Image: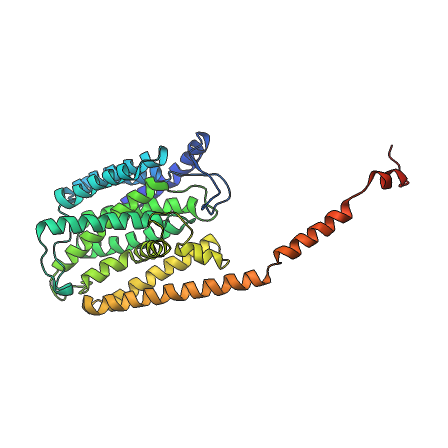
Length: 385
């Protein structure tokens, strides 16, 4: 029952804290400015991750002592470190190398000290147990990739919060069913704080989570996904909700952030740009070009994420060699279809729009009609008094 109480405390604290945080951030001008690649049109407070982290930390401090947490104490420390990396970047932008260095320290706390790492590929691609140092390196890479993939999708009202809600709900429920109380407690506590955040981040957003929130949540989900993969693989055959395609199940939990990151990186590299060059090639940008609102895009992508999780549940007895190609093929097909539909919509919109030349001619005509010479004004019999 502790996870229920912790969930409600985190949610309640978040609901109380966000209005205060919004006023404080607005007063001291910690806001996200419109323009450029930004979709929003007004100044909106950022750093909503402060309240997410604070609500989660307070709730855990109240209820975690009743739950055996030695296995996650280093994870909690790493999450706190990642929070401060994001906070520092939001307040005064960090150099990419400094930001990565801070993330690496947090990742090493999880992978090396807490020993939350991918130790085995369980026969995927013919690989079983991994070499210790390769396991450290591969696990660190995976957590960094998941952290920054989630950070990249935080560009639309309600989107990052919706995806985080889906992921933490599934992880919390699974850990609870399998008896991993500490992981379940952490998942449900974060879930409560995120739901409170969504009240204020849903379109039109009153606050954004910023790197303070996206890095913290992305990192936490990345670590918990790896914990899920390893604990799932260790379960005996025939255990309820044991997934045979362990690797694919872990990927599916963070499928949308991973696909979006791979997609934008591939498009940028193909255009001869650096993979981190900012642009408007994210999936949510394409959906918005089709005339959809922020909330509609967030719901569509959230439902899509849930659909793939249901699909992997139906394939839980298949191997990774079968499940992963099916998931990958469907994702690529949907991405290709999205590009086609968006391009067709944009072309149709351009055809219907007035031509630039006709606009100029109409403007010149209106301008000519509006010109009144001084002679005409003098000859006009109107009362000028």
